[in-house]
Image (cartoon, rainbow, N blue to C red; front, side, top):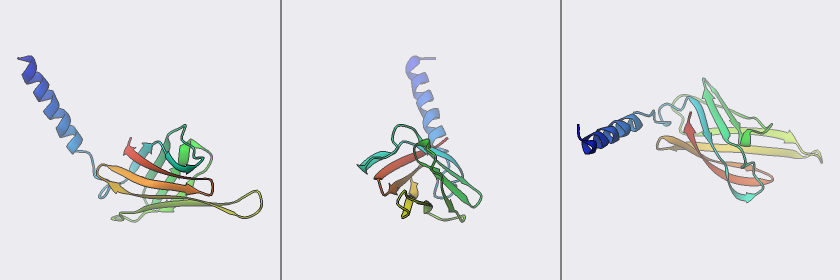
Length: 125
């Protein structure tokens, strides 16, 4: 076979594999990973962040730190919301929120806390 034909065939197979990725709008279940990109403040951007959607549970871990944000999911939702409310050192509430939505074959979203605001694009692992 000719090299040009093999290259073209390989490209078509790769495109076919990419087009078969499940759309998060209809099938968001699984593990999603991505890095936070800081918009304001100090965010945990050194490590990957993870989003897991399983059954009726949503779990988001920003920057693989000790914070675990939780939410619920109902089949067919186009919105993924997880939050954690802790007490700060001065006794006031400290709220962290992940607000996600399907974007093509990824899940986009924002992470906010009193110290930071960041956006993230998460891909399925």
